[in-house]
Length: 362
Image 1 (cartoon, one colour):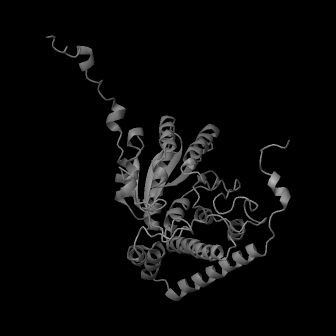
Image 2 (image 1 turned 90 degrees about the horizontal axis):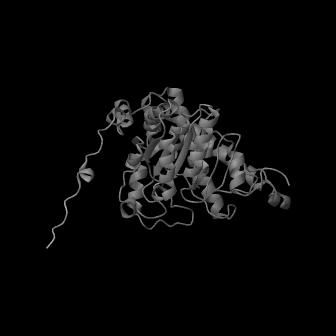
Image 3 (image 1 turned 120 degrees about the horizontal axis):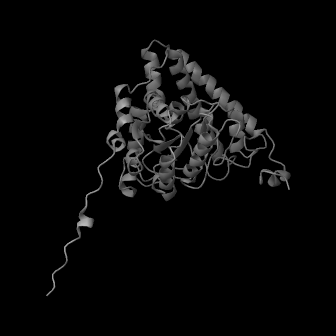
């Protein structure tokens, strides 16, 4: 009886020793830098601005929910309530003259974080001609080349690949800009995300991948749908350093942004950030969110609300609570103005069906 042949020496040859580059590479290096100073040293004026911006998103989204209930907003509507610290903390660190942003369909908050006029955003939500996409994009597909905001995308995970293209354009033009590409914990399991990771790392593209982990995707807890629930580690195979951040604390988000953005701007390639956050409403306005308890949601509101956290910090720093209430009142009035503007704006003319289809005219 013939015995099995032993493996050849060639097959047993050990892999070549790691290069110095491999030895020096540390996926945890940015996290280590971040841990040294996890709170952004914001001035009182900056903290007040963060408070106002997050409050604007909160009040705007609450009003959008009301308009949806009245039938003034059609289709789907995904609110950003609870996640405000992510958009404000990150986008406040961007260079609006150079950098680009792309996201999924929970996009109203990101546009407001850019400082875009609430009137044109609300008009877009209600499908009006005065909307930022002339009423044709609606809630899920807002777009503004002027502000380098490239959507608003309804296909889960598609914006990540498009973000890779935006980053390649930044590198090709040599404009010094970076792309901020948002996606959710549900989209994190899409194959195109990892194809983009690979290309971005290979070509050292100036892109920051941001997972907004609100824990439930469309309605399934991450632990039930993802083998690896710590999304910042998903870039390991592509040598992309990861960062884990408390997405409910705007000062922590901004501190993390400072570290990540500098790394990318210095030509080191992409970074993957996991922002742990929580949405108070359902996935969309049509979602009753029965997959979680009311007690769980209330606990998040009571102990982790990003607006209450910055408000508490401001009061402890000497700000008068009455002043902060006055700011809230003024923001409510501003949102009401935006809603009135939208309701009184005309719908698009039928001829708009034939515009913005192709880049050139034929």
